[in-house]
Image (cartoon, rainbow, N blue to C red):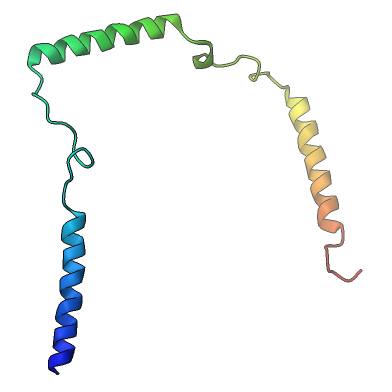
Length: 104
């Protein structure tokens, strides 16, 4: 009984020691370097610079930001109906065709 309790106590202690060591904050690894908090004036100045940079970027309008107009080709109802009929006939032919592994 004493041996099993001792073994259990040692196993529990080793598990707790590993968890406690893993939670230790080593300098330069887990935490950011401490810095002085920003003042309201510094925050406002940074906000203004971000706002002006964002406005410039929005006005310049990079090519990748603009939607392409080539993909929005209009199709007529007749073309849509023809494509629908073609898909429907292909679907019925595929459904009637013998499946793999099926006896013919």
